[in-house]
Amino acid sequence: MAEVTVLGAGSWGVALGIVADSNGHRVRIWSHNPEEARRLNEEHELKDKLPGVKLSESIVFTGDIAEALRGANVVVIAVPSSAVRETAKKIAPYATQDMIMVDVAKGIEADSLLTMSGVVEDEIPGARTAVLSGPSHAEEVSRKLPTTVVSASSSRRDAEYVQSVFMNDFFRVYTSPDVLGVGLGGSLKNVIALAAGMADGLGYGDNTKAALITRGIKEVSALAMKMGARRETIEGLSGMGDLIVTCASMHSRNRRAGILIGQGRTPDEAMKEVKMVVEGVHSAKAAGALGRKYDVQLPIIDEVNEVLFSGKDVKEGVYDLMQRDRKSEHTHLEWEKE
Image (cartoon, rainbow, N blue to C red):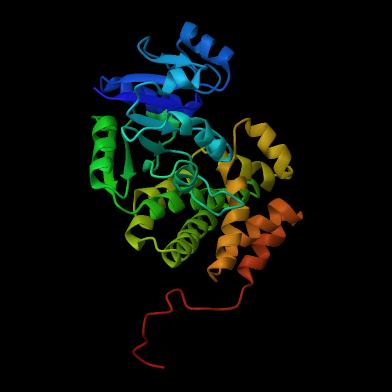
């Protein structure tokens, strides 16, 4: 039996707590709000985000991070990406070599341009880290609908241990050594999902959505590979798989925010209406900076940034994408005839 601590009592943290509890592990979930922890212990339901999902009484909630981390050997970091560094600082005094830090937050830090597992390693040198990512909406995982994700770590032993803790008959976990690729895929797809949502908000159709998904994964792959990630990772669950579900589902807060922006809301108004953290907004600027740093063209991501931070009209952004210079889809392919 593993001692699993989840840091973050949002929908994804609670859903992963349900998975680990279903597998017979001891689960504690930390909330930064002690009153929220007290209420969850009494009501056994995250009513605002996972309504109707009853939580096992064996899952213990606490507002005391020291209590939450005591004896833990799997620490799941399920806070918003903007809070990962602060949370890692709180973990550091209690961190031991018996703990595997499992990042499930999807984002790129704006200042350092690090993925979230990189942020954890920056704050806790020598930490054993892993990333758990893939097409996995909390609303479905909490109801035990079939889901498949990837556990990535530089250590095969740690990746396989995380796999063993979470894998069951409704939550299938693969392993991967490509930590960077899994982290980038989960982060960058949120920016593309904002674009897909904006297209939906404008009333565009399936053709537009397919174009954004296909050309979007091309951008994600080009940047990730330039940074040292593997193409296979971006073509897999944590890249293409996560991109598809995030662009298509109304569970996706990034797509929902994009729809509202496409309908005329400002980015701030859209985020307030979604009522949850929209990670793509935080990652968009960092993604643009990475594109400039590694000299990779990211036209969709650049247009999303223009809309989010420069007040550009969404329709104008689409027009500019469609009017880019003519080019071949795959420049490395050779013609039989000139």
